Length: 245
Image 1 (cartoon, rainbow, N blue to C red):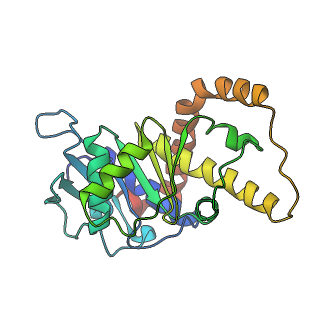
Image 2 (cartoon, helix red, strand yellow):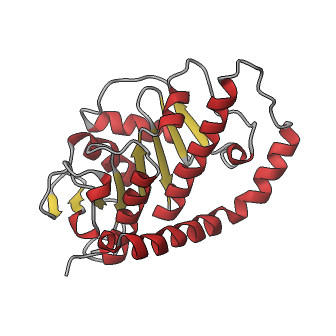
């Protein structure tokens, strides 16, 4: 039996559902989850990541690769894509548990626009008030760990990092939390891009209302994410049971 079956199931479910949502399925967009070391302590030196060469819709729990912080494959029959390692290893070393990186269409579109930010104009956007960081400098592919360490610094204590020209990273204590942020961010970005396409001014929510709403939502975010992800897994168990094998 492969190690970390519950963690594998969560990560595989996130990848399969991301493919359904058309979050830019590919073979080199990557999700990862830190898991405990052999002594049972989660130091960030061991994590699961989707394998290089498989579409998200092909990934199953058993095809995920377990590797360490040096990029050595501990368990698995596939390669780890180089930029996955360089982005994710520094994130996990900084004690980020779940790291989801993708080039989702609408959020990525916002990241391509000079000086444009996610505006507090719609309910989903309010979930990201004071929780989103921006890295507008595109440095090409992440070719070494220094680039990943730069991303860690840019992320800071936020939950989301918008990468200019390079998509989005969400960071969470669980796959459910990081995936919910991906979903609601894309919905907020979609609403903003569509509104911007009319060439009319955006109407921001008043700051006082935005902050009150965000404060009300914050205590519920983890619970909402958990319930949302449970529903995703129920659907996948019914419609794509091979996800969990």
